[in-house]
Amino acid sequence: MACVGAAGVDGAGLSLTRGSTHEPIFGTDAVAEALELTQFTLGEGPCVDATAFGVPVLVPDLEDLRDGHAGRWPVFASEALALGVRAIYALPLRIGVVAIGAADLYRRESAPLEGEELSRALSAVDAVALTLLDGGALGDRDPDPLPLRSLEVHRAAGMVMMQLGVSIDKALIRLRATAFAEGISVETLASDVVQGHRRFEEAQ
Image 1 (cartoon, rainbow, N blue to C red):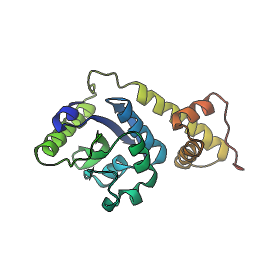
Image 2 (image 1 turned 120 degrees about the horizontal axis):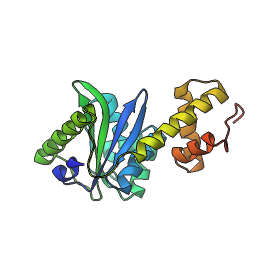
Image 3 (image 1 turned 180 degrees about the horizontal axis):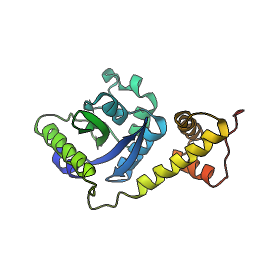
Image 4 (image 1 turned 90 degrees about the horizontal axis):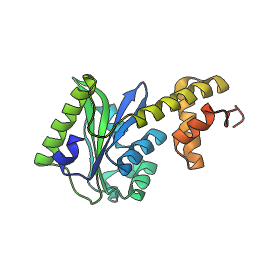
C-alpha cells in the first residue's frame, strides 16, 4: 500500500466498516494482517476508534502508558506489543465526511508520525479511499483472502443468531468473545461453526 513508503513505516493494514463491525480486508505483511484480525476479534483498537470518531489516532509508543491507550484498548495494546509493534497510527478512510474504515500503520520502534510524514500518509490514505470507491485494487498483493474469511465469519454469525435467537450483532459479539476466551482467531471458530463442528447453546 502506498502509505507505507509515504509515511516511512514498517507496514500497514486496512479495515472497512460494515454495519457495526470493522472487517479486515488487507495487510502488507503478516504483522499488519494480525493487527487487523486482532482488532476484528476484540472489537477494540485504534482503527475502531479512528473510524468511530473520524480522526487520526496516533500512538508513538505502545509501552508509554501515559497516552491512556492501555485503558482504551487493554487487550489490544498487549497483543500488538507481542507482535513486535511499538508504534501504531490509525488514519480514517473518509468519503466526504463519512468514515468508511481505517488504515493502520505500524512501526517496530517507537516514533511519532508528524509533519511531512503524517501529511503524506493522510494523502495516501485519501487516495486509497478513492480507489476503493472506484472498485480498484489496493496494490500488487491480492487482497481477496481476508474478505473471504470475513464473509465466513458473517455466515457463522448468521448460524449463531439462529441457534441462540439473538440479533446478528450479538451473535458476532458472542463469536468474538468465545474466540478470544479460547485463544483462537474468530475465523477459525467461524469455520468450525459453518462446518458443523461447533454449535452455540443458551447454556454456554
